[in-house]
Image 1: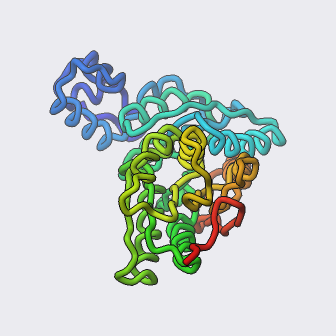
Image 2: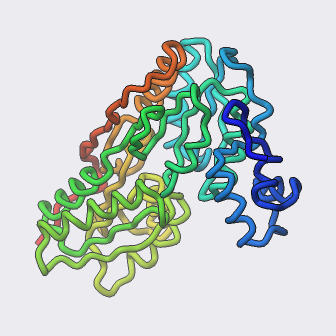
Length: 342
């Protein structure tokens, strides 16, 4: 039986169309490893086509508000997301709302499951899922539920985007290094398939290509945006042969791990190597020496995204497309970076 346009698609409809049991569909959305990969992909494709949202029976009745915003982040870890959530929660509480916060990383089916579980209690969504293909996943958010999307520009007028100017920020960092005489440079990227990481890598490499010339030696190492990767990559960055004179970390967290390793080995920043980060989280200025970094207003981004959600909830979701809000970056110069001495 084909589901009516007037009712919500259920797990029964998906199972019928996929010609599998209800239990199999349930296992797919609970990431049960017993489901064969081919079957899992087929069921997810059918669910996407039918715009099925798991646990949709838990939804509140139309017009009922719970004063809650569902927040989905890639991780709930580190000062970056602490600062972001501080801005978001402060703004929400000013209007009598609360945040329901969880995380998912690189798992599309888990994201759909979380959206379904949150949908019954959330009046709107704040989603930071910097992975390709997020557009298709967001089609599962019901009409009438506003959603702010961090890090990805979308064409759908139901959603509104908040973007960091990653490309130009990284371009500016590389330009500064070159202008200060550095020609042996290391770039530490974020994790693969992360949209922020990819834009920062592209911007940095473009500046090297545009401004550096053939004499520039660029070493590219893959990090994961976590403190431990800065620590673990430090021996490769500081190896004696052809050592770089400057390193750019694609976020401040990895730079912190590098600081830790340098301190343990009795090496000095910037005397042994100059360092630039990205984000300017709270402790960047407290390090010794202070971290030179690309700054944007993390707390403000959290506030602004919640403000837009609250506006949509109050006025009913506006179908007029909204231009994305782009947060510009600027270089904050501190003691971790010096010009190259000839």
